[in-house]
Length: 200
Image (cartoon, rainbow, N blue to C red; front, side):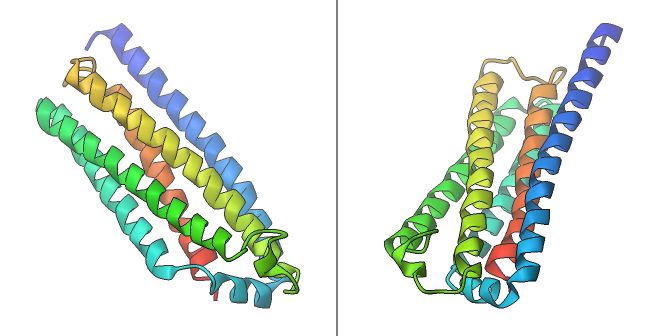
C-alpha cells in the first residue's frame, strides 16, 4: 500500500469514527430523555412494557448479533483473499437486516391494530406515562429501524462492489467501514432491548 493510499485509508477510518460518534450523541440524547421520563413514570413504563413482545425483541437481538458475526467474518474473508465467501457473508448480513425490519414491521402492525400508539384508542384512559412510553418506543425504535434500513442498503452495495472487484484484499476499507456502521446498529439495539422490552 502506497503512502498516499495509507493516508486515504486512515482518513476514511477517522471520518467513519467521527460519524459514529455523532450517532452515539444522537441516541445518547434519546437515552437521557428516556431515563428522565421513566424516572417520572416508573409504574406506567413498567405496565406499558408488558404490551411488547419479549420473544420478538429477543429474536431481533439474535438476528442482529448473528449479522454482526457475519459481517466480521466477511471482512476477515476478504482480508484473506476469499472474495466469494466475503460476498456470501455480506449478503447474509444484509438478509439479516431485512429480516429484522420484517419482524419490526410485524410488531408495529400488531401494536397499531390494538390502538397502542400516542392518542390511539388502546391507550385512552391510561396513565399519561404509558402514551409517553409508546411515543419514545416509536421514535427510538423507528430511528433505529431507519439505521438498519440504511445499513442493509449499504451492505447490498458492498456485495455488488465485492462482485465487481471494487472491494478486494488490498482495498477493503469500504467494507470495513460498513461493518463498523453495522456494529453500531447492533450496539444501539442491545440498549433498546432492556429499555423497552424488559422495563421492569
